[in-house]
Length: 336
Image 1 (cartoon, rainbow, N blue to C red):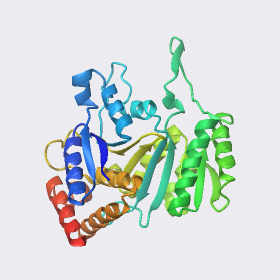
Image 2: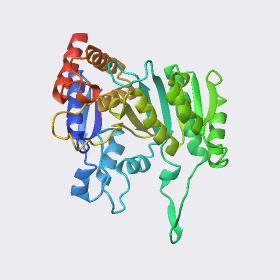
Image 3: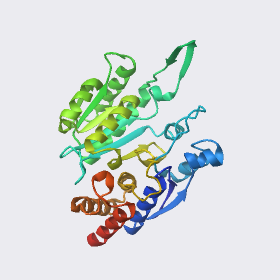
């Protein structure tokens, strides 16, 4: 079986890391046919918006997407292309697995946790207005249905992945209705999973405890804003945004993405590290059940990182995008 996947190259270093990722997947025998689609800067030039309908329709049709980093135009009232993508396609699950990789500077030894972020509500609903001159009200939305479906997704993920402890992180003491509803949904859905340890924790306490000892945590479940902030903190524990994958998943589509920025200062220089997008593409392979290919790629990446001779500059090495990519492809051949 082959899979048709919408490919969004992205801006800045996006085309470089995307091309490297596609080369590695092809070398591993991934049965993927790519369908390029515009977004970000390219889409602004062609369609006047950063996330055009033609791209959304492509993802709706293919049900799968791989996305490089995107820029959002400054000013002009444009909504973030990433936020638009999640809301228009109802990609309510923000999935961020965070692991320590070999030879990655700053990574917490043995780090292995998964963060789930509810992607569609909270302040990201974009409901705000100026009630009087100089006074703006932003509305935080929280529905029972959204809390239940993200909790269900997290519990099912844990059941199939062998995860056994989850913390629902909130600020119910300050927002007893909005955060309280999210916490209630977590507990009620959790009643069907008595074999999973279920805990809750204030998001401020989590912010203190994570940098001190992340090994105390297995799976984290958070609302949109908290999840956005804490997922970057977790990435820092792994060595930075350039080494962690990400996914946005809904009932009818899934988009896998690099969560780092466009790095315009090194764009086009062959210095970019494709690791984050490559690991995200590996999540795509797992999502469709291509576990053998995903495992081969993961082992090849681990071998290159552990060897240490072909690390990119952000990992303390001198290799460029091409050298790192070739090393992973060579490692694939050794493991076949």
